Amino acid sequence: MHKLAGAVTTLLLSASLLISGCSFNLFSMTSYKYADADKYQAGDREITDTITNLNLDYLSGKVTVKGEDTDKITITETANRDLTEEQKVHTWVNGDTLYVRFCASSGNININNIEKSLVITLPEDQALDVATMDLTSGELTYSNIKADTINSDITSGKVDITAEAGDVNVDATSGTVLLNLTGNSRNVKIDATSGDIDAVIGDAESLDIDVTSGTINVTANSIRSINVSKTSGDSEFRLNETPDSVDIDSTSGKITFYLPEDAGITADIDTTSGEFNYNLPFTRNGGVYVAGNGASTFSINATSGDVTINKI
Image (cartoon, rainbow, N blue to C red; front, side, top):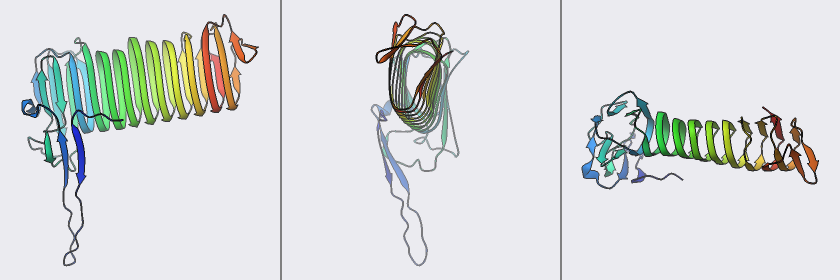
């Protein structure tokens, strides 16, 4: 699921050798390679170029990208010990794109027991076209960022995004996903294996969630289309406006919607083990339930777990 800009292969060469009653450990080395390595600069730096694209590939640690009242970009890295030039963050500005890499491109670099934190500060009034950030393990935070597209890929850890963005794509194997999106978004997509999802959204055209296990909590003014596929975990949606369409496929866990009192819905609810509860004025028409003018279509298939649609 995780996509790295450079090929990363960790070679664990640890061993214990028993010689004359004594033991010792060998070393841990990593192969971490990427293109145009000779163009990168090591360590902290300030950048005055206008950057509209961010491309970051970081192995592990805490990464923060934040917008502030400034006219330059600053890159600051801290670590639990002194780093060699090869072990420091490496960056390259190519035109309007800032490339950020965990360390030097090398087939044999020692990053064993190194704990790093990276902070990238951007001018808050500079909107990015595309921000792509890949993190193998750790914590990835966006704060006060504007971007047309945000792509975040994390194998294990936490993703926390506060931004104004058109398209948002989050791919997480395990860990928590937190979204706080302001303004008008086009498409918001979250693909997670395990972990909780908590999203606060202003207005969006579509929300797509594919999760194996974990709770889902969504609060929004309006989302025109909602598509959810989940195996286990409870889901709750609080919406000020009724979506045009909802399609949910769930194996286990409760599904709860809070919608406007005058919501017009045609709902096809299929529950194998569970009940359909509501306090909206639904009437049953054959195999479907209709409230108001029935303009919005809800299709909810739940193997086990109650489905509830209440007024907000």
